[in-house]
Length: 407
Ligand SMILES: Cc1ncc(COP(=O)(O)O)c(C=O)c1O
Image 1 (cartoon, rainbow, N blue to C red):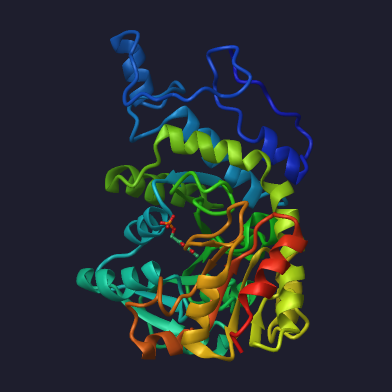
Image 2: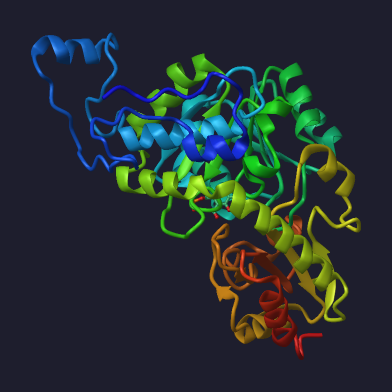
């Protein structure tokens, strides 16, 4: 059975999420089956040769390609490039960190510099500060709020190959001006990588703003149900995809498995619908917390009080379900609130249908020195929420009761 072709016209975002990449399906199954196979059979030597030489489409070995992996990677690429004239290229990795390290391994050599935003996801920070220096790759940081710092870093780093951005950043929600950063990076001959995990292509599509490569933890919103640890790399450059990123992924080996790819593919079908609700609930929770007496500050790009609200409006279509807030009572209040929640789930991760809540200082950022935490804007009373898609009244009622005595 041949691949069913998509209509030639530009498709809407929800339609792409549902129909996306239509991978070859040799059964009549309505839903793409899970091709849980490590290797593929050659009909003859000539067939095998045609596959190896790329003269015929097909699969050879599971680390090189798989129908489920291709379909899901293709759909995420289509979503990131929903408004671009040319469709970007996508790869699926075994985790978000697998995606990020694949990009670094693919594009950096000894002596190169990576210029990254100061405030980054903790494992990305560890990769850049503890592992990459062993391969003589230096990290220089800039404050994402001040592009003149990026300009200065580029000017003093002749071998700056990559500018690495996470916007909004985890867990401070600080934004970087993606258009401005891309202009400066390109003028200096560097490529721009954006971790779009928090924003997702529903609220922000960095390729449209000049970014070269997107990385995702698909563990989060793209899968949506907390069933997979996975990652994705998307680029609009065909040569980078074929010559650097794909070889790095398959030789470095951080590939995704068929079952995980399939689960993410199922999650993608409802991704825009889920995101609409995450955005509504996120804003409602932010507005509730902003008025609460126990809370000193709420970090949510959709609030008018958010210091970078204008930038948020200029580069995001909506503001997502992620937020953080600083409790006036500091560390003790953070612990107290965490122990009191009844509906919200105490867990790291984000982007699942249920609301997750975490206290970075005692949980995911506890290994960082207090100084590093302070540089990243992570106070002792900072609580991070990944607002889910439950009924908003139930989320607010849980927060109300959990905050008693936290002032
Ligand atoms: C912004 C961001 N990037 C990357 C990652 C790493 O993803 P994974 O846990 O799928 O490796 C995470 C994980 O929380 C994240 O929040």
